[in-house]
Amino acid sequence: MIHTFHCPNCHASLDHDTSETTVRCPYCNTTVIVPEALRQRSAANTTFTDSGMSALLSVTQLARHNQLAEAAEIYRYAFKVSQTEAEQVVRQIASGTMGASSTTTIVLGEDGRQVVRRAGWAGCGVVLFITLLTFGLAGGIWIAMAGSMAAVISTIEEAIGATSPTTANEPPSQQGPATSLIRGTAVPDTPTPAPTATPAFAPLALQFGGEGTGPGKFDDTRAIGVDGAGQIYTADYSDGRVQLFDPAGQFITTYSLGEDIYLPTLFVSRDGANLFVLHSGRVWQYDAQTGAQIAPLTSNNQLVQDLAPTIDGGWVTLQLDGQSDVITRYNAQGEVVATFRDLGRNYDNDLRPQRVIMGNQFDIYLLTGGAILHFNPEGNLIDKVSSEGRDEESQYASPQALAVDTTGRLYVAGSQNVKVYGEDGRYLATIPYPAPSSVAFNITITLADELFVMDRNGNQVLKYDLP
Image (cartoon, rainbow, N blue to C red):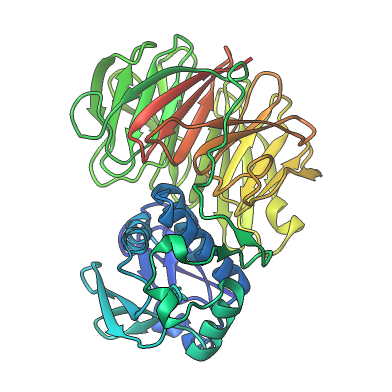
């Protein structure tokens, strides 16, 4: 049964499954402790799952090969923690401070800071994986070991091969290879090759930015939009700062939409006059050149989750109404054209849609966790587009954003790259991000078939020319 309560930080409505004791707010990204009255199942009964084990093994292997950003993204997605928490754990794994001969307990204090405590653990030569079992405790949240420690260690030893005390002290080159928990086959101790895109498919045409708060710099910037003249608009996630750039990436101006707002996405009208922004659960309209507010476009009680432009100059929203998902299409005048209810739930009652876009024929794509569902303009399911996974040839990893080009191809922005699929769902290509990129929260495609990526972790804007 799902309960609803309000985020103490931004007051958005939060849905809670009784099997969890924390929930992350999709609007301000705050990890919120579920009120005690809404909890029913003891965290002590949570078991250590195969999927959790597999995710931790993948994280450890990537971290050991210095692919920290991808490891952190997998960890964050698999265990529903904040980006900061995930990055801290991955750094510990990579540096070897979370490993053999120690147990590690991670404590989140009342101030939200993560404190790591360790105790000796004699006789263990395997890498220690942490099962995340979260339960409320006075003074903070403890993330501790789940299930029987002996059973966990036995499972890990069978999968990756425990080393003897002598072997554990030998140089890494003399130790045996790691073993995949998924297939039970040896994994060579070599760096994972990065996917490469066919240069002719989508060459990188523009790259600019850098970390900071000054003009032309980015600080947790996630939203991006482009008008018909090629001007680029970006917005920071948590301080309302919008920046404008010319088509060559040169800084033009900046303004603030207000403090203490959380801005996950935006788009700009083709004439460059209006900026449409999602924040505080509503869609707002601003003057795109000055930032002056024009009007709120949705009511207080709608709690909009996502916003995307449509081919006719209108927009589509994803609204969460209790246990239901509601998709509403608006025309350029702000009039409701069509409404669809429970598309995600009709496919699978456990799915909670996160992102929505419309194709050139007003077909609908829903990102629901790791699944991307494709519906026709009447709301009937066409197919499921690929799946989340580790297959670098066809699957996407940690999908965050969707876009469609003028030919109907679907672009899925995930960890390290953008995957491209045909209208029939067939995999076409991979577009890798250049260093130091890793995760994009938003992408957009112009009518000239230019793909713009707002790389939040790399603090840069990327532009690709599409065929």
